[in-house]
Amino acid sequence: MIRRLIVSYVALVGVALAAFTVPVAFTLTSQLRGDTEESVLREATTMALLLGDGDAPAREALARMAGAYADETPGTVEVAAADNRSAMPPLPLTARPHDAAFGDALEHGRTTVDWGSRFVWGPELVITVPAYARGEVTGGAEGDDDGGAAESGDGDGDREGKTGGTTGGTGEAAGETGEAAGETGEAVGGTVEADDADDGGQAVGSAGPADRIVGAVRVRYATADLTDRLWRIWGFRAILAVGVLAVAAGLGAIVARLLTKPLRQLNDMASRFGDGDLTARSPVTGPQETRTLARTLNQGAERLDTLVASQRIFVADASHQLRTPLTALRLSLDNIADGVDDEFVREDVEQATAEVVRMSRLVSGLLVLARAEAKVSAPEPLALRELVEERLKVWRPAADERGVTIVLTGDADDRARVLAGAGNLDQVLDNVLSNALEVSPDRGTITVRVETGGPEEAVLEVLDQGPGMSAAEQARAFDRFWRGQGLTGRSGSGLGLAIVKQLVTDDGGTVTLRDAPGGGLCVRIGLRTVGDGARWISPRPGAPRSGG
Image (tube, rainbow, N blue to C red):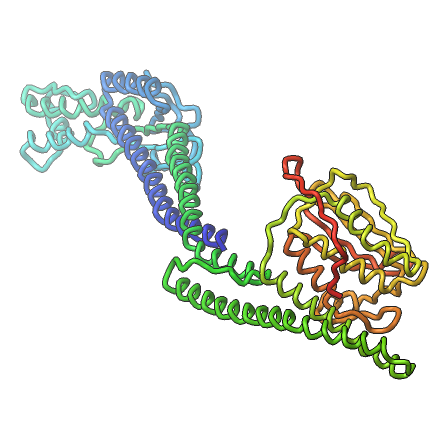
């Protein structure tokens, strides 16, 4: 759940960041492209105006400007004449004068802008601008003003040509009465000089149109610097986005853990409760919903714990109270059996005594189980092999009466120590050995194996040669009051293995059943081991204890 909350939070931040950053980056990219295009177009237009002036100083200035532009910027300048074939000294002829951009500029007067790619831009920006004859427009206007009539300045030159025999091609007046026209001719001649380089030195006899094209200027601007700036724009925002997402992930993890802490506490409480710890409670923290849920679960757990505790107390008290009358009843039956000579009566008394013994064992088992469930003692380090040897010494006399041999094997030495509650392992061995001895045939063998199951586990196995159990019986063997099929039919109280599982589980171990090699049943008990620094406790021998 924490992972999903973090992913959702980071995704939300990522969407918000993309919605803000990406449009800004595109806007900056478009602005960078527009500013560059505007700047280069303005410079190309300025050069086209110089080209349109037509005089030698203007062209020299244009040449110096083109050289400085190539030195100071990543761009180069190219110039084409109106015929798209000849050069315009001192500027060199362009390498590709016949391309479409020059054609559009010289023939149609179109300014073209080519970025070289539809996606952002290509390796260079190419702008081609037509150059118009500036002097011709000015000269025609001046001729109209100075002439004071509807006729053009070229017409004035013709009238004076009758007396002076001159032409308006050079812009000089030769007639005695042509001084005014000569002045007009000089003004027009200034424009003609700008056109001579393009028109092959031919004189312009009349004022042409105001948009006559005398050439074209092309600026090639390399976009490598623009690409670097583009990468900086997008790269900075990408790094910023990654940093923001990383911070968002960290904050999301903190917030998610804070939000889910009450749920995790409830889950821990439920896990402990499911493992049998009825004292588990959940802290009442977090939002209102989780506090309400925690209170409800705690109240239910409290009621259940009270009911179970009451049941355990009842079972323990009943078992304790029943032991005394059962003991007295058994003594009475023994006395009756000693004073009766009738075989039939003696047989009935012996059967009654056997039932009393079985009931006594049942009561004792209930009392042991109730005490085991009511209080879990703290595990202590015990020497496993020594404890097993002591318990086998207690059980060997009972086994010898039936000719059953008890064998101790395994690779665990005296240094192997396990964690177990005080007296728990003794009761576990007593119950397992009692069951094994009850189902073993006469002159059979009970094998007790003590081995090291791993760095943190020791294994105790008890194998008998009895009839064994089916898979279904093994699954039910740890149920209370369930009794297996011994050699003499249903026997025991049905609490022995239930007590074994309860005590082993309380000590953090495991107990399982499986078929023994060659027939019979194998009871495998896994116990936790301790390190060398643990306190060593020697087992204390005692009489056999069994819950049935």
